[in-house]
Image 1 (cartoon, one colour):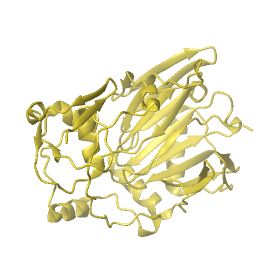
Image 2 (cartoon, rainbow, N blue to C red):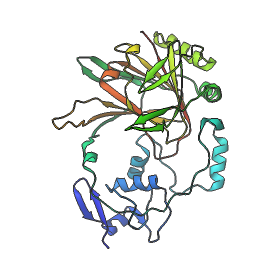
Image 3 (cartoon, rainbow, N blue to C red):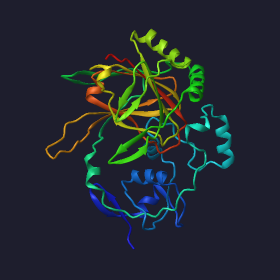
Image 4 (cartoon, one colour):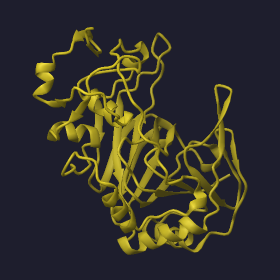
Length: 344
C-alpha cells in the first residue's frame, strides 16, 4: 500500500526519508488527539480522513513549525511532551480564572480517538480562501485598515487599559454574577446551541442573527466601572453592552459585522477583554466574482490579552467582518465586553 501526500498542486508520494529529518515517525498505531495531529500534518500541506492506517507523526519542536501551530504571537512551548496528570492538576489549581459549574462546560475529557489517515485531493472550495495578505497587530496603536467611499475603517489597540489586579477581580465577579445564557441558532434548517454564553445589558432590547435579547437596564458594578473608564478616556458615550463568555478554546463566534441600524451608520464599538488571551480576526468584505464566489484576501489578526481595549471605528462594520475563531491549543475562559451606543 502506497501512502500519498496531497497539496493544492495535487498528489505526491510521501518521502519518509525527508520527513524523518523534520518529524519523528513512529511505527506503532497510537492514540493521538485529532486536532494536534491535524495541525502538524497541515504544516506539510497534508489533508486526511479516517479510514486508512498510516504511521504516527509527532512534532519534534522545530521553532518555525511550532510558531505556525501556536500562532506567531504565542510563546513557544519548552517541551512537546504531554504534561503528567499531577502537572495538569497543579496548573489548574493555580489558575485564577475559574468558572462556576453552571456555565455549562464540564471538566471531564474523553480519551482521544484512534485515528487512521488517508491522503486525498482537497475540495475545490478549500482553494477559494486566499489568506496571503494577513496583517498581525501586536503593538498598541492606531491602525487604518482601509479607505472606501463609505469612509475610513480604523481600529485602536490599548494594552493594560485595565490593570492586572482589577481585570482579575472583574473577571471573577462577572463570571459569578452575570446571568449567562447559551442561545440557540438555526443554520441550514438545523437548530444548534451557540458555542459561547452571552448576556445583554441596555435600556432597549437587541436582536441579531435571529436572536433576541430583552432590555436589562441595570448594569452590574464591574460593567458600570468599565463604562465610566471608557467614557472618561475616549470622550464617547455608551448605553449598552453585550457580554460574551468563551469557556475554552472551542468556544468561538463566526464571521459577522455589528452593522445593525440601531447603532447608527458608523458606530464605534469598544471591546474590553478579561481572562485568557484570544485571537481576534478581521477580514475585508468582498463582492462576489463572476462565478458568484466570495474570495477573501485581506485579513488582520490581533491577540487580545486581559485588560486590553480594542476600538473599532468609522466604516469598520460596513467594510469588514470580525470573529473569535476556535483554537487548537488549550485556552482558559475569556470574557469579552463590547460596549455600544444605541441611537435609534
